[in-house]
Image 1 (cartoon, protein in one colour):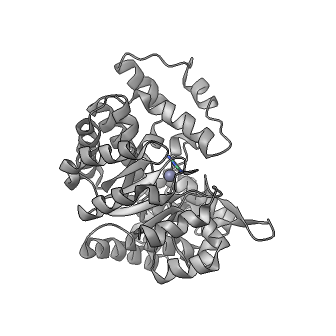
Image 2 (spheres, helix red, strand yellow; image 1 turned 90 degrees about the vertical axis):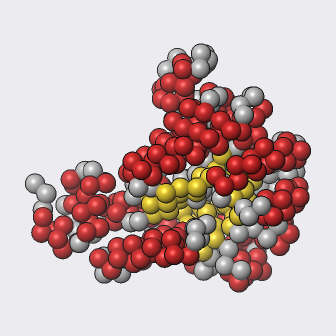
Amino acid sequence: MIDRRSIMKRGMWSAIACATSGPMRALATEDDMATFIAALPKAEYHVHLEGTLEAEMKFALAKRNGLNLPFADVAAMKASYTYHDLPSFLAIYYDGMKVLLKEADFYDLTFAYLKKAASQNILYAEMFFDPQEHLKRGVPMTAVIGGISRARVDAEKAFGIRSQAILCFVRDLPADTAMAALDAALPMKDQLIGVGMDSDEKGHPPIKFRSHIATARANGLHITAHCDVNQLHTLEHIRQAIFDLQVDRIDHGGNILQSPELVESAKALNIPFTVCPTFSGAVKDAEGEPIDVVRGMLDAGLAITISSDDPAYMGSEYLNDVLVRAQQRSRLTKAELVLMSRNAFNAAWLPREQKAAYLAKLDAFAKSWKL
Ligand code: ADE
Ligand code: ZN
């Protein structure tokens, strides 16, 4: 039976935890981290919509679009998700998204992610998408952005979750195709909040997109950039992102720990980092010893937030699962978990008063846990 007294004691947020985290055993111990994480009001900024394309949905969309997939079933498809570095991951990820052809496909993909996110008490999300890959297959930009936008509206109505979309430049495709994607998207710029850059950065430094970034900024869009961990010239890429492109945010960026100067700059400029421990958990120090990225960046005083990246390809672990693992691995305290959610809401590309409303919810949650 649900212990009502413990709900009363924990306050409203615990009641929500009970409703959202499901298992009744979560209520059994007062000090249950999983319950705390489930109830924590969260925002997520580093999630690739195409990376939320679950195998089950891939089969459903392939059927709807009359495509054959080279896998007998969901289990066989999931078993093929083995990768050892960024390029081998990206090959699987790009192959998987070929089932996305129609506006309704982008709608279903986005709606499913937002439904899942809302169930994990994510109040607000900024989501990446990779239009160059879709344009290559002849999918019009109106179908991509139209489907995403329609799902955002419906998900907010259905689940209360707010979201915005970030157009990513696929770094290893020619720069002119990135500009063509931006040009095609700009008539719908009111449906976008920012631009980013992802994919394989080897030989594709941030400054490859200098003019794209200038155009995006001139159109009122925010700027972020992936600096995946342990990539060639990673510190130079982080430097370019901060100083040459003057990004508003960095995605991953864990190797910054290898440069005290860059750490100081990022702190002085208050640049938020979207860290995805599932994919980018460790970098090496000067002696070649592994440093835990989350712990290292927190201790360095960087404004980090935690995200799930490509959950469908990472064991279907969405943000709460990622946080539970990160808490254990990086020995995160509840106060640190609240701090990272605070960093996230502070980093939202939203008007000040809307951020303040989310921060007030977080403060109420923290207070109810006596933090
Ligand atoms: N595309 C999807 N996920 C990515 C990641 N983590 N890094 C670079 N490109 C990506
Ligand atoms: Zn990413």
